Image (cartoon, rainbow, N blue to C red; front, top):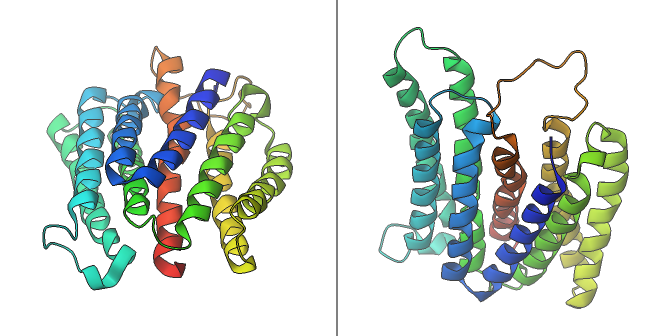
Length: 271
């Protein structure tokens, strides 16, 4: 189950990532490395996958390579500068593809007849997508001088932080209706407040509201799918790690990392 410490960690990570993105790519990358490593270490353990060390190493390598290429792309003649922020999707897509291949290769090396091969493969592919999406924060930071970037960074960071403090707490688990009723209006209010702070025009306010709503949806999905303290009769038991408290931090960090790509997509298409 999610704990208050996990919600606090997710909120802190969102605030630090957003603030670091205002500073620049290197600053946000230093924070993103920590987020990627936390996700990589805990993701296989939280999902009860065998071969946890191999899968953690796979996720860590994929995430760090994606982050590194996102920083280098366009600066060493690899990218297409004329595409602007949109060009930074190229390294993410390439690394995501190789990460999926690596997920299958790990299971092939485990050998035929090993338990939970399919479940481990699917879980690893999900983890690959999340660590790659975390590179979106570095992409955002590289284009933080664009007019739309400040309100995106502020609204996404504030939304993920505040929504995590509410949605990733134990008393909100198993209550999807309450979660939606609270998080949807809260995310819009945060976006409007961010726009008022930055004196943004109506168009930017609307875009920020969409970004905030999408970011809060990531947190809500995490809260809705996290192991609950009160399992339902239809829930299938999952062989999670013997240290669920530590592994649970990976689940809490997942929407924080993935929120970076939301800002990147919006900035690339509408900025």
